[in-house]
Figure 1 (cartoon, rainbow, N blue to C red):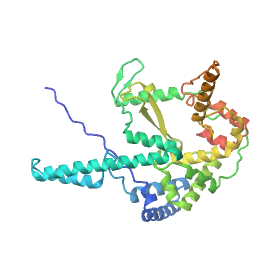
Figure 2 (spheres, rainbow, N blue to C red; figure 1 turned 120 degrees about the vertical axis):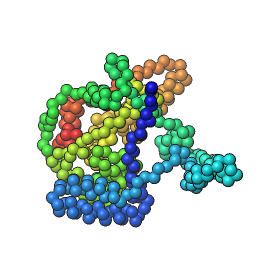
Figure 3 (tube, rainbow, N blue to C red; figure 1 turned 90 degrees about the vertical axis):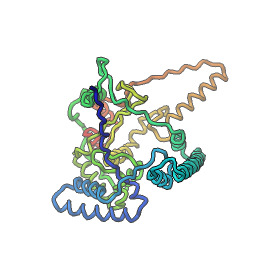
Figure 4 (tube, rainbow, N blue to C red; figure 1 turned 60 degrees about the horizontal axis):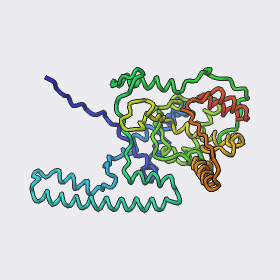
Amino acid sequence: MVKLKKLKPAKVVPRLHYGALQSDPKLKEKYSVAVKNRFQALLQDGETLWESLKNALVVTAKEVIPKREKTSRRKWMTKEIMELMKKRQTIVKRNSEEYKQLDREIKIKCQEAKEAWVNAKCEEIEQSKNTDPASMHKQIKDLAGKKTCSSSGCLRAKDGTIILEKEKILERWTEYIQELFHDNRREKPLIEKNMDGPQILKSEVRAAVGKMRKNKAAGPDEIVTEMVTAMEDFGIEKLTEVINDIYDSGEIPKELSKSIFIALPKKPGAIEYELHRTISLKSHIIKNILRVIMARSRSRTRPEIGKEQCGFVEDAGTRNAIWMVRMLSERAIEMQRDLYLCFIDYTKAFDKVQHEELLKALQSIDLVGKDIRLIRNL
């Protein structure tokens, strides 16, 4: 006899509501005071500056910040409707007049709430049409209910067979990532420059933190930007000290040098690893350090960028390139001239960068030695 066993779903760890640090002044003050007290105690116990700051931020967050409430899949759903649904569940007799009346009331309120949510979204799209096009497209997708592609839970091996076991799937992903980022290089390529460079200022760190996006997943160190911004000047000051320690020594703590890779399918039910997009969750602290280095090196890298370069350049995105191609095409049609376009698609171009050649290029444009060392050690 065949018996089917119902598998228990994996235990989901509830996420903390980091946004409450910005919206609730009392919670922000409570968190700030608790972090300062814990930080001073850890520092006196002999822990390093980085360990003291990390533990103070993370442990206090788990104790003070509330967990994110479970929300309905339908974004227009209100608490009032949820309460009415709970009340409806308590009614035993579904054929009773009380149940039918409550069911009608819920349906009417659902229709009203959905209509109000759609109208509000349409107004937001109209407002952001001219001010924030990127946000407009995101809101349109949200309104259209476009769902993300779900994973198939299996993967195709090199020999064409389908892998179902979780351990083997992880092994295959590990193999694929190693092949993707393969680079013949020495463990620590030589840097032919003096290890000098000015101290990183609080103003630079504050500017980098201000440019960080909110409500982003934490890296291996479990620190998010909202924790630092909630501490205001104290957070910026201590973060600057930590960054300068790393900048001066070139030694990066393990939590900051790690990345958590996540594979997102490009198509629903994709089983080929090529049809997945790999993203990595990195520490927010290391992102801030890299923002500072990028801002410092921009004056040296900008002259190396050609005028025709679009993408990763301020005021020269891929939209500009598309607009130029369209203008050229229209003029060619108007003047009845031939137009030849050549498109070159480099497969995994940014994943296949040769790091030793990159370091040579950075040294050739006279980048600061400490900046190059930090990039190499990462």
